[in-house]
Image (cartoon, rainbow, N blue to C red; front, side, top):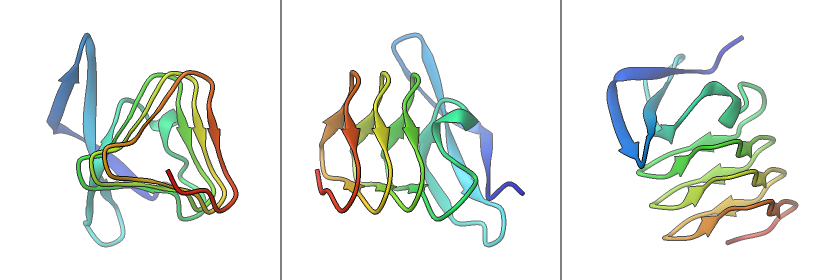
Length: 102
């Protein structure tokens, strides 16, 4: 079952990529921006919110949270109970997991 939807009417551009704001289906809460559904798991409590952005082949899953103005991109993975926030940028092939805070 899907936990969020992409809002095609609320989008931003990063270079030649288009990222879409997400919205939780069950309560209408607005989230951050992702490029495609593969960026954010529909399982568990993983979430992207505020002005955070996840794109490329990056993945956020488990109970991970990406928020504020953080960016997760390229082939990075954020999972477990980790948090990426502020103006942090996680990219390339980085893994952020466990209880890590970036």
